[in-house]
Amino acid sequence: MHSFTEENYIKAIFKLSVNGTQDVNTNAIAEALDTKAASVTDMLRKLSAKGLVHYVRYKGVSLSEEGKLLALQIIRKHRLWEVFLVDKLKFNWDEVHEVAEELEHITSELLVKRLDEFLGYPKFDPHGDPIPSETGEMNLKKQKLLAEMEINTSGVVLGVNDSQPLFLKFLDKIGISLGATIKVIDKIEFDNSLEINIGNNNTILISSEVSKNIFMSV
Amino acid sequence: MHSFTEENYIKAIFKLSVNGTQDVNTNAIAEALDTKAASVTDMLRKLSAKGLVHYVRYKGVSLSEEGKLLALQIIRKHRLWEVFLVDKLKFNWDEVHEVAEELEHITSELLVKRLDEFLGYPKFDPHGDPIPSETGEMNLKKQKLLAEMEINTSGVVLGVNDSQPLFLKFLDKIGISLGATIKVIDKIEFDNSLEINIGNNNTILISSEVSKNIFMSV
DNA sequence: ATTCACAATTCGGCATTCATAATTCTTTTA
DNA sequence: TAAAAGAATTATGAATGCCGAATTGTGAAT
Ligand SMILES: [Mn+2]
Ligand SMILES: [Mn+2]
Ligand SMILES: [Mn+2]
Ligand SMILES: [Mn+2]
Image 1 (cartoon, rainbow over the protein chains, first blue to last red):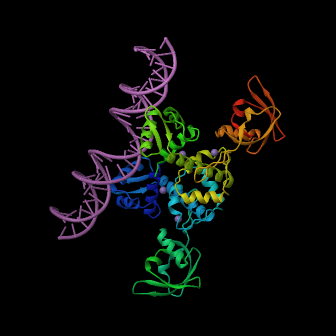
Image 2 (image 1 turned 180 degrees about the vertical axis):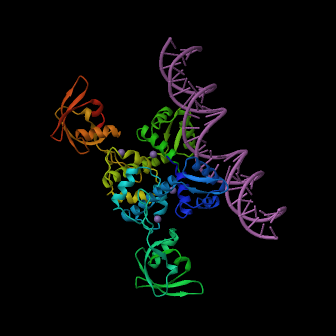
Image 3 (image 1 turned 30 degrees about the vertical axis):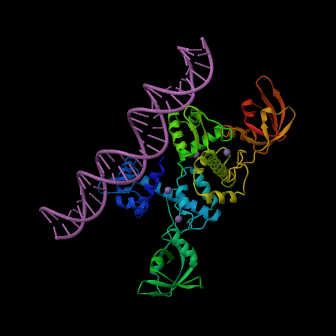
């Protein structure tokens, strides 16, 4: 079995590489896990010995096939629990991440199977992120950033690129949720802010910081 | 915050004392947690420093008020999760204990509150054990052991004294579940086995090992 | 009162995980 | 190409939790 710590490292390495295959820096991992580079090096040696990563000193690290599958299974659990919290326990989408961060480490395979069934085999989590299957496959949605949409075009919100509670609460405040229709009215060249219309109601201005973190249907 | 290990010690001490107040032996704790006495002594020093137990070297240990409440909150979570697994995820009552042993350590208070609500504020877990309230109160059922019932009297199964999968599976096999009505037909003096009738159907013989682990309504 | 049994503790040491500081390797830049 | 900068690694050591062996305390038996 793997410790919580090992699992968190594996997940971090997965998220820092594009699809778990590219090389990742020690410092990047340290920052992602809010720890120090020396601790990362220690753990990489250990994960390498366990066969979960390919690691060459001073060169970088990437996940092995086994490590990649483990990462996807942890992410699967994380996202299924997030769906549970929102759909069944009425959590808001900004309240689920931290709790799922703990629940993702529960080991029972039967639990994951039954939870998936109980939730109706969801394909996406409350932030629009795809839920990997048992074998690690994910349905990626065709999407682009709101920031990249043309003036006078519309789209549907498919997900967010940032699941920080502060950001999610702001989206709640201005009425943006998954499935909402957004039309780009104008693009202000000065600061790249966008004038948008949400669900044919409010027309408001959002900064590029915001529009770069919202995924829209193509 | 408390580590999983600390929480498991606190729970073990609670279960070994009658209601969390009586003194408990070092060796008893070691056996309950499948560890060694030397490790227990180490931990007792630590729990004492944290104010969770009253500990006097060579004399014994008991929970402080704070420790008792912590124990009851962990037991509350354990039993609520067991209800979830059985009622919502269709686990059998012999499959839930191990998983709940992990889930009981998840820290979110909101999660426990919402789970309780989602489950309809259950008062007993799948084994008939009472679920403590947020403040640590429990409804104890009036009950006695099946082994102590008189010949020709009937009662309803309220709980089990042993939640081992092997025992629970055996009860499934012979048709004993919570709420089942059992009538004592005969008591065999030779080995204290009982001839019982379950739900006015099967009449079978059960050993005293079994009858001493089933709680019945008075 | 002394001995004995055994319960409990202390001691030394191992494995994890993390951190600081010193060192080494790689890459950039002059 | 050599020096400087930056990234990563190796000491070294702390805190946690575990254990075997040696020691100490307690209560019961003689
Ligand atoms: Mn985690
Ligand atoms: Mn998510
Ligand atoms: Mn536990
Ligand atoms: Mn139970």
